[in-house]
Structures are given as C-alpha cells and as structure tokens.
Length: 324
Length: 198
Image 1 (cartoon, rainbow over the protein chains, first blue to last red):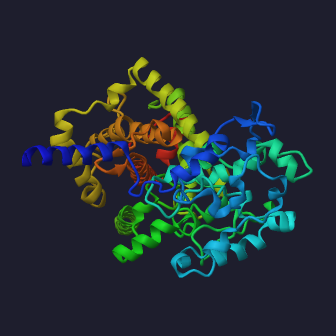
Image 2: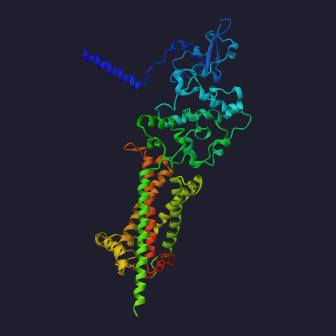
Image 3: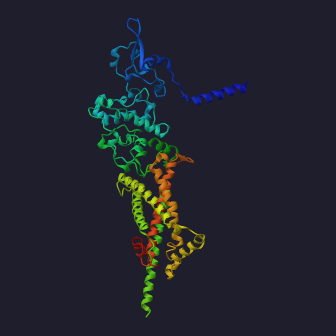
C-alpha cells in the first residue's frame, strides 16, 4: 500500500514536471472564462436585444486576447475586471465604457515596496524623456509597447538569451516592421529596416544576437532595461562601444547576468558573453598575455642576434685590417 | 641559382600582402585598437580571408602539380639531426664563421629547420586559420558547445592563437631572410627567383 501511494506520488510529480505547469496555476480561470468566450476568439455569438436569436460577429483584432498568452503572463492570476470595469459583466457592453480610464502600470506598481526593485518610477521618467513620448505626447503610454495581457518578464529571468532578445525586439518590431500600425502613429513611410542598417557589418547576426535598444536607448544605470529610446541621430553607431573590453553590452543586454555574477561570485565572469562571440569583448586576457610575452621575447631574441652579428662582423673587419 | 619559379614568387607576394592585411585588421579588431575603422576592418578581414583561401587552394594545386611538395618532405634524419645542426649553426656557428650545414641547392631548397617550419605553416597553421576563420564567417556551422564551453569561443580562441603563431612565424621568417649571403640577398631572391650562395 505504501509502495503504491509512493508510486502514485512520484508519477504525479513526473506528470506535473513534464506538463510544465507553472508553480502557481492561474486562480481566476472560471471568472475570466466569460470574457475569453468572446475576446479569446476571432468570432463570437451574442443574443440579439429582443432575445430572439444568436447573432455572429467578428471580434475587432485589437480586442482579441490570447488566452494561452494571458495564462502564461505575469498577470495570469488577475481577473479581467481587476483592471477593466466590472460593468463589462453585462452583455452587450455599454458603448460608453470605452471612455473609462484604464489603470496604468504605475497605478499598481508605483510607490509599492514589493515592486521597488523594478524601478517603475525611474522607467516612467525615462519613458517621458524618450523619442516616443516627445513625438506622441500624452497619447504615449506603457501599453503602446507592452501588452499587459501577455507581458512576461524576460530580462530578469533565467531564460535563454535568445528568448530575451527575440521578445525585446518583437516589442519594437510590432510597430517598426508593420506599416499599418506605423502609419496610424506616424505620418511617414515606414523605413526599410535592412536598408537603414546597411552600414552594420554582419547585419543578420546583429539583428538576432542583440536587441534594438542596445543601440537605440540611453544606458540607464538605475534600471535594468533602458527605456529612454533615443532619436536615430543620437543612437550608438560606434562599433567599439560594444566590441571592446569594457563592452556596452555589459550595461545593457548582459546587465542582469553581470550584476548577478558580481553579486553571487564577487566578480564578473567573462563567460557571461558566452551566448555570442563578440569580437573585441570576448578576448581571453590570459591567451593575449602569453602570446604578447612570446612575441616580445622572440623580438628580443632577434635584436640580441642582430647585436651579436654586428659585433662579430666588426671583429672580422678588425682582423682583416690587421692582416697584411 | 634559379630556385624560385614565377608562380611561387607571385603566390608568395600575394600571400604576404594578404597575411599582413589580415594581421593588421585582426589586431585592430581583437584589441579594439581601431587602427582601421572597425566596420571597415571587418570587411577587409573578410575579403582578404577569402582571397587567402583562394590563394592557398591555388598554391596547393601547383605545389602538387609541379612536385614542389618534395622540398617540404621532412625526413627522419631532418628531425633527429638536421634541425639540431641548423639551430646550432644559427646560435653559435654564425658567430664563429662556420658555413651553413645545409646550403640551398636545386635539389634541397630548404634546410631542415626551414622545411619543418614551412611544413607546419602550410599543412597545419594555414588550414587551422582557414577552417576557424570560415567557422567565424559562418557562425551557424560551429557546434554550440564542447564540454560546456561555447563552440564559437573555442573557434575564436584557436583562430586568435593560430594568428599569433602566424605573426611569430612572420617575424622569424623575415629575420632569417637577412641571414643569406648578404642582409638583402634573401629578399631579392624571392623577387628575382635567383638565390646567391650562403
């Protein structure tokens, strides 16, 4: 009996591990289900006002929320009506509800010690200085770039670097690689990203191995991910900024890893840049020192050999002079 | 004595120019010295690297076609006695007025030390530089990790080390060229093809 229960327990553990369930399964699935019945799909049916028939409608794209994405996000334990008015529990929704103010990130995260390490206030200040805020004014808010329904923290986690990079870049490319969205915000043609980055050697590698913000945001010592997006003429265009011993990447993309390294090991481990080989930044100091010693001692040997040859040839000349 | 045919002299000149450009751009990028602007350095390094591969391929073709490879064939005697004698000559004999134990002839262009060094450079160092260079040029082809160390890092480290050894060879090679009949005869022989006796 004991064996059977132990077996069942281990089996359950294994199944849970394989299924990859997060430690805390979402708590408000049932409450949210009514919302996802319509907002999780491309089409929905609703009862006509005279209650005579069910009518099929298409869901407006911007109002479709990925149910799977939501339950993997940082806000997965929320009820929809925690942020949206509970009047949305009535169908069809009142048109006037659209004009309700929606909570901002700072409404929950600001001034709370629990979230102090994320420096939300500093992020807001940086955002307000960014080129986006200066161009869009009050219309610009966190949600323009970060969808709170699917937002999942990346840079601070232990997940693989390529996922951090792709998530970071997807945020920028959502507008900067989509002319439909871009043109609703800016009255100019969407620039061809490959063409305007033509000067960048090994463009494909740069696009896949670093985030846009490495060059396009001002390095901010206070926050982990810089949010002050710079205009293009102020963006980094100096290769050596990253390709050097004191690489900028240690203050941007690899900032979390480098600070964690210093915190846990007491020093910065050179392996933190291991995900990609960054010429100039990854050089092995030991190898360079050994080789420079080898090269300089060879040079010294050559100089000494030359000196002895000159001395010898001087002596020979003397002998020839003395010989009649 | 006509030792170096035109194709060898031409290949040697091209190889020297390409190698120098690779060393300068390689150093510039590796140490972030920006002797040449970084992005320009990369382009020059890539282009010269590819040209070096082509030049190496053509060298190998003519090397085996013309029988030039025979001058690079190391014998057991070279390893057991020749190298030691040649080193002894360079370290002591030169200063005592001894003659070169292995003077260049039409049948034996290189002394055992030269032969061994050139053998290692041509059959080991250059292929190592080329293979690792290609690996860095096409990083997706490099294995992700080897014993927990990034494959790309290992490739880069071998490439850098091989480059350093190439520079080491270049320094010694240039110096030994001054040890012919006159200080400049070694240099003129690779330009004209004619070798003056040691």
